[in-house]
Image (cartoon, rainbow, N blue to C red; front, side, top):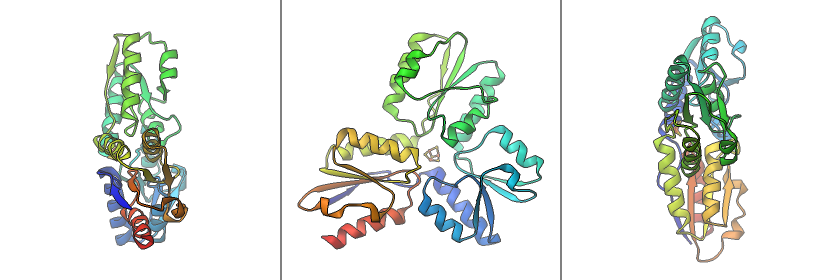
Length: 277
Ligand code: F3S
């Protein structure tokens, strides 16, 4: 078996920064609160909980304490509520996401309508919507783009981890409906590179493994991308979930991982294959 690892697999800049800052905080104080799971990887969050991280779900669960805002960011109201409760905010919002907040806040102030291309249930999208008073129209597919009526100037932004090819298709539809749209492609560089490398690798191998949290939308998108190219694509969170007997023989195996997948999880899977050889 030949194992090939996709370029840009695993932690992205924003996630790494959030983890590093959280670890630093936990080492110095032994305890910290984070609003929502720090990253969408249960194994890594568990590791940090053992170091003293506490996950809270509402701003009211912290008062006069330090609260971490995760890399997905949060809405303007959330920051205001934390400040009102005299919390010290450790803002770990990824700079790519903060940039979207600034764009949305700015255009909303200029009376533009806001369209977010992304998953309406994802915390990053919920946070972005919170910078235009929760007024954004959120779409996720070509069908939804086709149904949209645009009657005023609109600013369009996207979830940072959105599928780059689907983004282009949706933007073409929206541009054909109106010349009053301002488009900001906010898909982050790390996502573009990771998806591209995964596509390339999936086309060269017999089987492909995508490693990521079941709640990680960028990992799920990577799985969908690879699955379109390589029928035998597996999506797993940990090394325990793989049916190793299905990988027998002289095959080429490709591995990639979502932005919130720690290296130690990727390494565990590689080690199991090495041992089985
Ligand atoms: Fe930031 Fe992109 Fe990662 S937005 S958190 S660098 S996937």
